[in-house]
Every structure is written in structure tokens, then in C-alpha cells.
Amino acid sequence: MFLRISTVLLSGSLLLASCSKEKKSEGKAAQVETAIGPLDLPAPYASKSATKFSKVIGWADGQMPTAPEGFVVTEYARDLVNPRWAYVAPNGDVFVSESNTEKSGVKKTVAKVSGQADSQRFDESANRVTLLRDTNGDGKPDQRSVFLTGLNQPFGMLVLGDHFYVANTDALLRFPYKAGETKMTSKPDTILKLPAGGYNNHWTRNLLAGPDGKKIYVSVGSGSNVAEHGIDNEVRRANILEINPDGTGERVYASGLRNPVGIDWQPGTNKLYAAVNERDELGDGLVPDYMTSVQEGGFYGWPYSYYGQVEDPRRAGENPELVKKAIVPDVPLGAHTASLGLAFYDGKAFPAKYQNGAFIGQHGSWNRSELSGYKVVFVPFTNGKPGKPEDFLTGFIAKNDGQDVHGRPVGTFTMPDGSLLVTDDSGNRIWRVAAKEKTAVATRN
Image 1 (cartoon, rainbow, N blue to C red):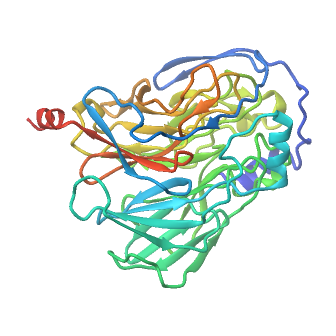
Image 2 (cartoon, rainbow, N blue to C red; image 1 turned 45 degrees about the horizontal axis):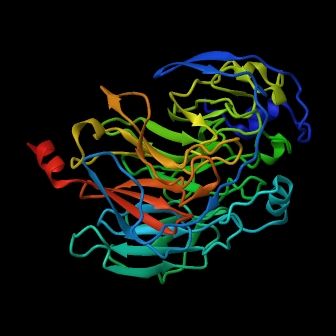
Image 3 (cartoon, rainbow, N blue to C red; image 1 turned 135 degrees about the horizontal axis):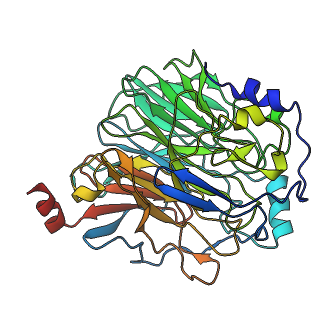
């Protein structure tokens, strides 16, 4: 039986208490066993919940992120307007959703209280999809066009059969599509309404086709930090939904995932993985974001617990039977890193250690005394099992002891030629990471 968040969570509490800074209980430190070994979790409130927004200063000409030895980083595209996500079509076209958190009185209040600001935080959303095409195979697009406009905070995109899908924050749209089109002129069908709103910017809706193309998976983040505005406001949220390609047959594939932005299939398997943005305001060390395999019908704790059965003190005792079923995620990625992107590397151009591993874009912290995230990490896989994350693309933080950052990575995407694209929404660029020729030749030989 599949867990439905609207039923399962309501069984614990019809309406949770309003948000409060006061601690319901101090809680205890905990150790949990993850797929990569034991993880020691500090007690809730072991450190004060801090607020430190980054200040985006941009990239100077010729300046770019840093990759490991054996790789070269180049600028794939620039002068975009908050390029949040991308989709690589079967013909190699790259679609880019240019979208951002919309202005609202709630967000302005948050910034005023904190006394700090992220220079990108209140930009208007471009609400469009741009097409990039590399016709001569030199690793840089030579054709660029505005493919689709008039959208409402678009994010995930998908080509399936003769249709182009785009996920607005409040609806899934489907357009008739022919490969090679440079501008969408057809009118869409709205095939699925999606829950929208919420104070904390979990507005992104990602899309992924099933391995056989018979289903579509839609990631929908929570509308709050820890359901402090009531579970009745979280219906169909903090879930990965499964639907038919025409929008019918919706069911909850997995639940209790606070903000599961990046979703992808592990190469050679039918195993779904997600990168999940965990909860805030429990201190610097809680709660680590994570990458995990996603079990069909599985529950991952939100909002009642984290990392399995570790109860959140703000929700303690509210749904003990459900907490007992909560699954421990596989790979911790650091607290407050805003791990959003996820792409398994199914190419052959990178050295063998990277093949079938996962690249994760970490957008960066705000709820921590020191900046964390602001990089792309790599999770190696051996015999289908994950290992410990390691830094891959760094250099986004300009000053380690300050707030300045050049940009903020979001999504990671494998190209047909085996290179890796990284969207940098605050830097208004897309970066391309390729193996140097001698590395690629050695890998082939």
C-alpha cells in the first residue's frame, strides 16, 4: 500500500501548533547507520540557529570554478536570467528554465529580521525556457533562442514521445513537440494541478520519465520548514508523485521527503535516487541534507523525524507509529548545504572512477554561522553501492571567512559527449566540465 501524505500525516495531527522558536524538548545526540557508515548527529539546539545569507558578487571575465586535475572548466553560456535548471533533450538540445523565487511580503520580512540579504534573493522571475544548441560540436552553443515564455516559475522539463513537458510551480503543462523546434508556438494542456505557495521557497517542481517512458515522476517540496503552519497545508507536498504521461493515475510514490529536488535513475538499474534539502533551525549541525535511494511506498521522516527514527523536538510524540517506519537515507551531504541537483554520470569521457557515480549541486547555506555548500560534490559508486562524497567543482565562495560568493550551483547534467553541465543561477551562467584530452584518451585505452 502506498503512503499518501494527505492521509498518513493527518492521522498524526489534524493541525500542528503554530511556529515557535521555543524548544519543545532539548533532544539528544544520536548515531545512525547510513549506507556509507555511521553518522553522528548532534543534539538539537547544540548550537544556536544562525542566519547568514551569502552576497553574490558575480564572476569577473575569465574567472571560473575549479575542477580536479585532469578536467577543464569552460563557460557554456552566460547572460541568462537565473538559469535554475536545465534539460538535455534526446537530440542534444539544452533547454534552460530561467526562473526564481518571486517577491513577496513574507520573504521581505525574513530578510528584514535577519538583517542580511542575498543580492539575488528578490529578483523577478524571467519565467521562460531558453534553448541552447551546439551545431558544430565544439562544446559551446552557437544557436540560442527563447523557446517558451509566459510561464509561472518553471523548473523541470521533459521530452517524452511527441510532447514537451514543463513543470510550473502550480501545474504541469504538456505541449505538442517536434525535435528541432526553436520556438514553441502551440498551446499547452494543463494535465496536472500542483500545490503552490509556502513561505520558504520550495517552489520548484522537477520531472523525470520512468525507465520505460510509461510514467512520469514529479517532485514536490514542502510548503514549510517543519509543518509549523499545519499538516493540512502540506497535502500532496514533501512527496515524489507518480503519474501517467497524460496526467492521470496520480499516486504518491514516496513521502516524508522535505524538498526532493534532484531525481534520477541509477544507471543499469530501475532504482530511483533523490537529493533532498532537509529542515532548518535546529543548529549548525542539523539536519544534514542527503542523497538516497527512494523506495516505492517509502516514508522518510518529514516532518516528524529525521534520519530514520530521530524525532524532531518540535514534532515529538505526534506520530510514533509512522516514525517507526521512517527510512534512514543513504548518503549524508552536510547540514544546510541546500543540495538540489542530482545527475548520475552515464557517460564514458570521464575517468573510470566517475562512471555511474552521482554529481550533486549544492546551492549553499543561509541557516548556518559559516557558509556551507556552494559547490558540486561527487558520490562514487562501487558495485552499485555509494561511497563518501568528495568535492568536485569548487571556487564559488570568494572569501571563506565572509559572505561573498561568485555564484551558486544548482543542477548537474550529463551531455551526449560525456561532459558535465552545471547551472549557476546567481552567477547567470552555465559551466561545462570536460575531461582533458589525455585523460579521455587514457580512459578509452
